[in-house]
Length: 568
Image: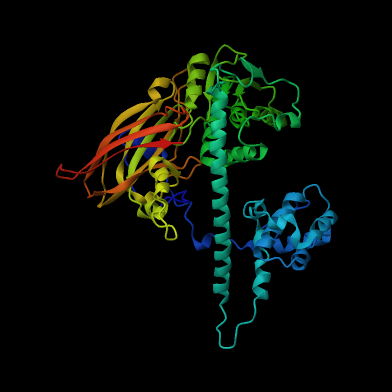
């Protein structure tokens, strides 16, 4: 099923072969057992170290943290919980509320904040159902007390064993974690889509007025990030975008916590320090400046970080906080219009990838920077990418997202089906639903390709590995960091995949659903053409035209699909 998947699968692996790059993927990809989830992975929250909300001292356990807060800070969690008659969710809100507001406050003032009783706003705010700290042991520390407060069993009832009680506690905790994680993921996914639109608009778009005259939001050419420290109020918020500082911070947090993404850039820089030493690096779309700081720490003598968003002001402070301001220079403006303080650069780094790789069109900006400033023997990181597809069988996904609208509490809502069928669905695909080989649709060598070549039409062929029903196609991309130094020595390469069998990323996969499933047998071939190009009404979005037929093992056509999708 399309859903919350990520990481390896120990027992259910499906071999996915590609027509291009198979050997490299075999060398680079590791789908190990380290992410398997078993009961023996559970840790007893009571034995976990816990951070005090007030002084941030690490205390040996949650129970001792309550004692510490009462004795050292004068705040009694248990007394407050009892006085307010808080249930499980109220207790969760209490812990997260205190962790949020206690920083910098003395504990005595907290008692005053609780004086509003059960009418307090924080008790109704679902924000405080979201953990402030990941895997916070305090969130489940009241469970033991809850168990003790359960009424004694009626005569004749068999009391639950300690193992059953423990299992129920763990199950309840797991369900809460899963619910909060899913809610959080939905929020961050929406924020990420909005942020990527904003960044793309900042780099390439020139909004037009009714008369057709182009207006440049931040000046006719560029704004150099001045040495003067920006005032917090100036930056928060002279933004013309959809959302304010909270959403912006959240989406940067989401991207930085994508370990596949961030650690790949870090490893490329740190594993190739001999190459980065004394080089000039250009960071296109620098955001918080993390890639620039990786380059600086790897030995670059100068890093130029370009962004047209006001996030650049925060990036300046981040760089100064880390003592790298003498190496990293910031330039604010559109990449086509800025003037850099150098004539050429040795390395261009950028995290430009969108859903299905090309959504947002930010690769256009990188290619512009490459053509304007990259030295003849310079490199672009990442340097290469592939777009791939395979066939999937997932009736549960179809029933949940498509068939559902046929009968909603006795009412037909079939008009709601069209969005699902007309769009590329960005979600995690269960690798166990893959029933075909893999086809590589497009290889992009970033050091050579032109913008015009990013729109493509290509034939493809998928051979079925089993009998079944094809409910759609699953698409993803693979990324390589590679190159050679002046002596022709190959730089240590870094590779990652966003495919269904790899560890999950914020890019997930993109699934293209069929209205009617295609019946297939083992050895059948699904073949046709896949056309992908910038949408006519919004060049940040993609249009995909799909034209496929199914041929049985004897060469007889048994089915066909022809339709278009939007990736947005």
